[in-house]
Amino acid sequence: MNTVEIFPWSANLETGIPEIDVQHQQLVKLINRLAGHVAYEADLPGLDEIFDELTAYAEYHFATEEAIWREVMPDDPWEIEHRRTHQTFIAEVMRLRSSHDGMSDDMAIDGILSFLCQWLAFHILYNDRCMAQAVIAIQRGQRPEDAKQQSSDSMNTAVRALIETVLAMYDRLSSRTMQLAKELATRKKLEAKLQLAGSVFDNTLESICIVDAAGNIIDANPAFCMSCEIERSVLLGMPLGALKSGLGDDEGAPVAWSTVSSTGHWSGTIQSRTPSGEITAEWLTLSAVRDANGDVGHYVAVFSSVGGLIQRQNAMEHWAHHDALTRLPNRLLLKDRFEQAVAQANRDGALLALCYLDLDEFKPINDHFGHAAGDHVLQVTAERILKELRAADTVARVGGDEFVILFNGVQHAGGQLTYVDRIIRTIRHPITLENANGSESVHVSASVGISLYPLDGHTLDELLHHADETLYRVKSAGKGSYQLYLARGKESPTVT
Image 1 (tube, one colour):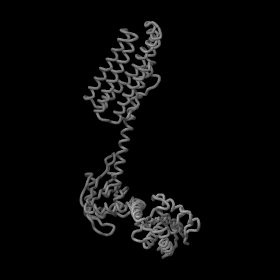
Image 2 (tube, rainbow, N blue to C red):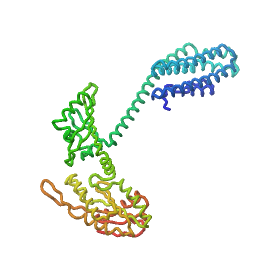
Image 3 (cartoon, rainbow, N blue to C red):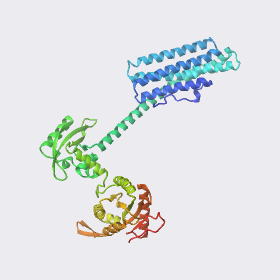
Image 4 (cartoon, rainbow, N blue to C red):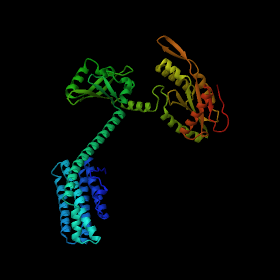
């Protein structure tokens, strides 16, 4: 259970009798548990449990304390008065417990906490300490009347007034601590709700976007970006009506916007043109979000296409496993293909070849001609690699200009080298870039590091690491070639 330390324990609260001090600490813990219960808005049954435990433990503690007093000061007026004080405390706790049914929880529990802290702190610092000093003095041989007088002198009226003043200040501090604890608990709950809302926004299959009062997009979830086939960074700032033609025409759109502005909600079917040019029907739920002044600041648009729900789900699953630019498998799908290939290789007694390929002159092209030209080079490279592979092999894009090729069913260490050689040679062919001034040819080459399963490792991470090490050696030696990982202690062939 969460606790809030509105009553911090310190050595200054000790009476000098260890058994009593340990029990005082437990009472303080119960009060702090009660404060935590209030701050974190736990349930009422939990509140009753703490009351029961607090009452039971207080009775147990009082019995222990009274036995110590009675053994040393039997039937003394101090001992009798102390017992009466204990009985008054139990009665007040029971009264406060029954009263919370008729008041708001905050009112009841705030009153209970204030009483508990004030009573227990004063009782420990004054009543118990006064009794403890007298008892300890009697146990050391002093006459009871002398011991009581000495204790009274040390706990005089000035000390009592000082304790009461400090406790009044402490009560205000405890109240502020509780208020801060409540605010912190409320903030944590709000943060958890925001995180949940963000997760729902990002992962729902429904297309959702948020627009400002002028209808321009300020946020969109992945499903909306996928439906428009536009990246989120490009979507931001675009008019929603330009993407969803049903919200930009002169027939139904004005009614939708007018209704949502006046009533806060509109839903209905709209006809919009997809990026491919097809007309499709979507169910739109449009909601207005108002600011503190009651003015519409934003709109939330949720687009649903029941007929296309399964297709969208399949498409989202596809793009979760593929690179958006080259449409090649990504690292996640590569891992799955690798696990399947390992199982097959183990059954057949064959090898797997994992090739880490990196383009050598890509960065200068990207820097000089721009990202669009760089993207074109990557797409052409992906197509060229695919043409040289068998149906059972896999090529994945794992980084900016990095590709991983997985060859299945390799019968010996050099069994895949013919394919690697052809891939390197075809990548060297010129690539034509179209620009405003016409066209221009560029050239890239590829360096490849190769590791073999199970000779060079048994996991995908191991093989990627070894292939990457080998790729670094290839680049250091002059680029545009390949090498096998040297795990077997013999030189691997190199093609330039």
